[in-house]
Image (cartoon, rainbow, N blue to C red; front, side, top):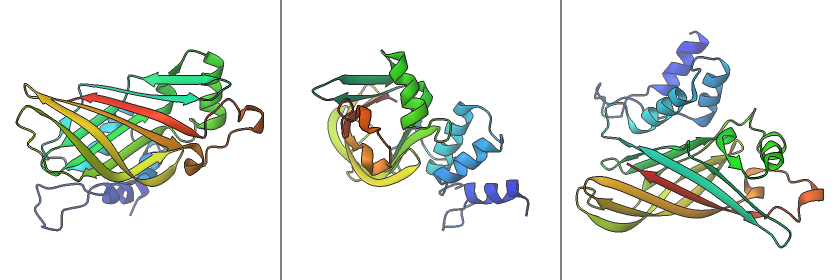
Length: 217
């Protein structure tokens, strides 16, 4: 079996039911990185789509975000640091109750360009760990066809700096006129994802970073 066929066999895994129209349930972040390095998929947008489809199933009723935004904020007595990316990709499947979002690390914009450079080169190592992502299952059952506001919790895996952590993330969902707006605020401990902060700047970077995710579907 060629290396390419081996990768594809990991991406496309039939459902236990054996239904040939149901494709793709298992796709690890490590395989995504391998695909990227092999140049099997050259564009980030295509890579993200493959990740989402393999998580949700190619023929699933998935709602892809028409706009996505993710930002983070670090606050210390010495300095406040914030960054934002409008390049987040996200998807929700109301039927399977799955949700996922991901972002290219180099897409984050900082007011301080030197900090942006340090973020990519020294902290996130963005040349090695290109994506940050979350994929999980929504715990609550809600009616996605009716207007309303809901609080949901998604249990899954948060992958930052190549380190996966089991997380339950809370989000607010507003459904109106057929559109879904999702907003989530959560915190990430730098140490949990083995991001090393030089002692010289530890007073400037918080140990726990505030993250905000917004998507319209």
